[in-house]
Length: 218
Image (cartoon, rainbow, N blue to C red; front, side, top):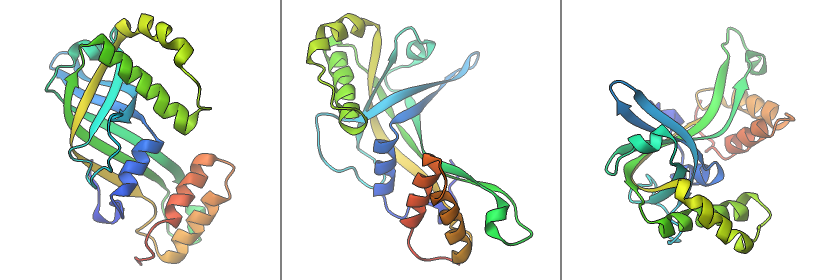
């Protein structure tokens, strides 16, 4: 991912926050010459056995994910492969009318983190079950109603043989936070105000991130 210097995250924690808040990643591997790359949308969680803070570039962190074993992507995935995980955060279209200057061109403000790492497929059914359970616990705590999974453990055990779980040892990450940093302060303020007044939650989340930017630039 090409990231111009003024669109880099102002603080490494932004990347970790984006991943935790938007854990549905697009996992991509090169694949083969005849079939080409494979890409699958799947949920990703940080290592559920640790509570330590991630480094700014996420290097050294461990992530877990899972997909359907019937997916050709799973069959193509090999332990030791390099995998790319693309996470997308808040984003919104910017109309030139908001700038109140001319000439102008439309654009799209967006946030994204690309994580690269080495994959290890998990063979153990018990460890696969724990990945599934940890994923449910993580998402219930953040996005659900703290559902109690205890009465569904046997159901989990029945479906786990069809689940392919894996861990990723992160080697590095890049964040793209394109939030009108190239614009003069008064234009950025107008863009942020237009987003914050939108009925779309995605626009309001983009405005919130713009409000966290350091007060520097043109």
